[in-house]
Image (cartoon, rainbow, N blue to C red; front, side, top):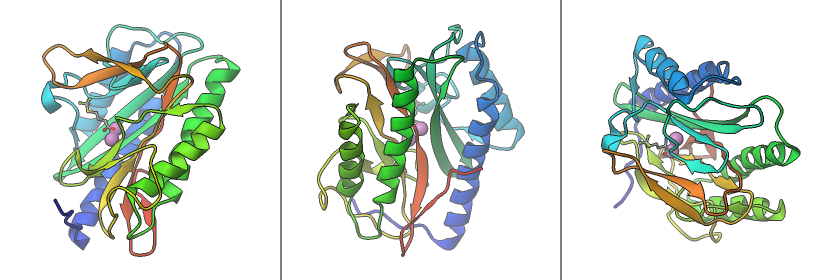
Length: 253
Ligand code: MF3
Ligand code: CO
Ligand code: CO
């Protein structure tokens, strides 16, 4: 299926939805402290999203029961907020998706709680840099494989692994659209990127094995995932617009 590029008006709406998501992530980051529960973080984002005129896109999406995903330590992604309290030394990815005026903005970041180990600090830094290496590989008429190649090269050189089966996606009028945006691959392979389409870049970086275990969420077809070896996983996500000269990062506050 060919991707339909966004027109000027749609790009404006996409920019607004992404700005909303980024501002929401900035807002919730201030509450990441020892002792807060992930349910409390979820409620803050839920209320903030509604009070600022947007819709929490994850809530009810394929039966997903919460507003955000909170993935702590060995949880790779889609961690479900609950009564778990953040504790000293945790790392937590918070993933926020806002729907505004029919368009979706999707971003996430991994935060360090209290005093974290050197290893935890390093994998968080590596995940951030991996995301940005992937984004820097975006060129109009380039390929999703270019993004994956640069991401995986960087991550493996740092001694970590990337998750292969889960990754970024097209986004815009739909939350999850084509193409799949991998965190590994070959230059010139995958799907071609065209000006005025939006994608997310969101590599999952694992401390040890890239294998993971799938866990179900009651009442939902969404799964959450944990590393098979129980070691750490970290992730950062931006939504970007492919332009006629390169790209623009849309999920900035
Ligand atoms: N925001 C996630 C992503 O980056 C998707 C979460 S879907 C949910 O694509 F249902 F789990 F919330
Ligand atoms: Co996301
Ligand atoms: Co996403």
